[in-house]
Length: 383
Image (cartoon, rainbow, N blue to C red; front, side, top):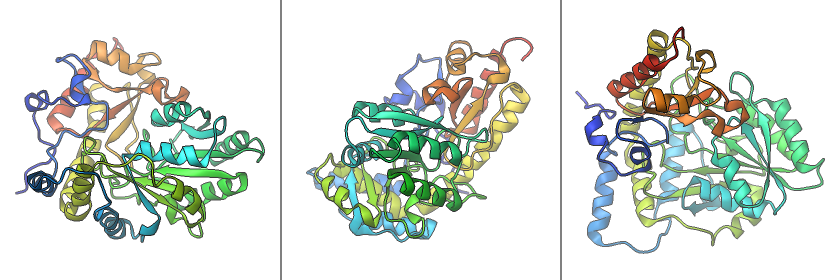
């Protein structure tokens, strides 16, 4: 019998010094930032140990990383990438930032959804870009009419350059965008002159019943970017490496980002191992996460019926609707203080995050059960 992947106990986890395990007081169970409570796959650990044993600790090259990701994309998604249009990046958000700096200018607008991963708001502002929000539907999917209106506002009727940061799959709702939706995004972007940059870091974590499609798989696409990394699916955030991939019409921008911030060689080594030798580990992880996402729904119904969530199609993150539980606009703050669990603040994802919190389910079923039981026990009377 294969040992569970999501089986690291709480005492061992509390010895970690990563952000997840040092942000809160020791009596708080953290379930916020996208770090998984796992030991990385054995091929990854072996590759890192072999690399260190050689003393090969110099500056990075792609060193097979592009080919490794290309093989993974072909196996998992039927996507034949153009390796000549791939460039190393330190991680996904730095890859996005570098593309933004070259695809837009100061004062240009960047369209993001609402709610969406908080750095989509902060990174453009860091680069002196304006942010325009396009609301998702109540089901957490792309609202293409709202997106078209945001594109028009951002480009000022076509008079200025602008960009759109697409979360694909979407963080925090766990929605997997369809080919039909992405094709319409591409049509709207072309009409308004918008550069689409698709954050696809959660792409490997898609459950049965949904199918990941890269933005660059849209038929006939000439403009746009996709950014990938093994960081989320294989729990490698500490080992920096990402890839920026470009559509055929983006060669000019691609040429300008070649000398930007780079990955670490340790990241290249470990992410290459993840994409080449860890498919079985990932398949097992997905089965365990599938069990966890269903467990959360059962636990909420039993212990916290005032809190609901949709079953995510992707990611190991669940978007908890706490509006019926009387916890105010920022339920994570209430639950930190009263349940002693650390979740992500819903309002940090945008105005439509009021009344929500994000839960990381990539932990053992036992820890997940204690988290939801604590939440239920903390709710105001009558909830």
